[in-house]
Amino acid sequence: MSNHELSILFFLQLAFILAIIRLVGIAVRKIGQPQVVGEMIAGVLIGPSLLGAFFPEFQAQLFPKPSKTIIYAVSQVGLVLYMFLVGTEFSIDLVRRRLRSAAMVSLAGIVTPFMLGSLLALQMAGNASLFAVNVSRWEAMLFLGAAMSITAFPMLARIIYERGLTGTSLGTLALAAGSMDDAAAWCILAIVLASFGGDVQIAVMAIGGGLIYAAMVLMIAKPLLRRLEPIAQRNNGMNGAMLGFLLMLLMVGAWFTDYVRIYAVFGAFILGIAMPRGIIVRDLQQRLEPITTNFLLPLFFIYSGLNTKLGLLISPSLLGITVVVLLMACLGKGVACWLAARLNGENNREAMAIGALMNARGLMELILLNIGLEHGIITPTLFTIMVIMAVVTTLMTSPVFELIYRRLLKPEALEMC
Image (tube, rainbow, N blue to C red; front, side):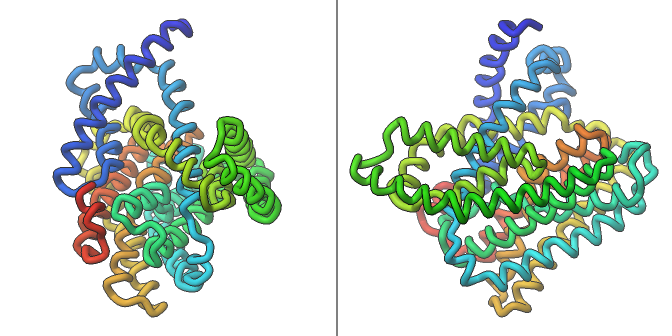
């Protein structure tokens, strides 16, 4: 297809995607699920699992292989903008006050699922339907351990936002623990990719580059960015030039962390933390949030759904593996984080709420799985199994959390559900 034909098709794809997302979103909100869950489900429905199964010719014409590259590229912009906005709402002061609990919850949420995932991989390694034939046992163990350990950090943030818990002690504790979890999981993934690519420099560059970037942004750039706040106050808000400058910084940060293999979303999140609180953050959220959450971010779920093939799981053995993966995921995350929170002095209700939130996977899980699929570490079958786990654990999060911690929910947040 020519570039002109792809651009024409892309607009039609966008219209179709947005229509399906709205329809599914309305349906899931009626059963108490946040919009983001509808977007995950819509991605699977539009892909080969449903639309491709019943209308294969239509699905192939609407989403030909060359067009997926465009969808992926645009979805990455949405991910970066969204993680940047999440960072602007992240309270370091609250993290400092809850650091010990967050660290312990995070450690439990990493170690336990990693061990369970590694044990599962030990049994799966050598199965050509799940892992590529050139993947060693310990590489399979590291990858699946990382995949089981990860938390849906952006999704967790979105659920907290939609439930009216942004900035609260509980919300910040969950975000802090989730961010630590994901940082560790990405470091493990960097080691896997280094081994798979035969170059240890990949892991060194990922971990070292990420630490250098975080230090430079939080220690050097953050004080400099504070000087923009008085300018914004004098002008009664950000002007176009300031917005353009901040977006340029965001793209540079996303590029650098992507280049060193920590991936763009973390560069965006760290820069968001560094933004001066006040008029600048208010204007950034007002200008960027609607277009990001309603237009750009959902494209990533669609891209993942286009790679998900439920028809691959037709054998009883693969369905059994899916059930085991789901049970291990819930045990390793939800139960382990609940227990860690209890051991650190949290009351039972708050500890259970933290366990429910940390059990969500979703967005970050899909990012990691797509990387594994693109690098030839896992097969489409294992990709589909893990996507099912991500969707189910995320579906569980809202009803379980609301059941446990309903009294904390604000009336306006309940209306959004």
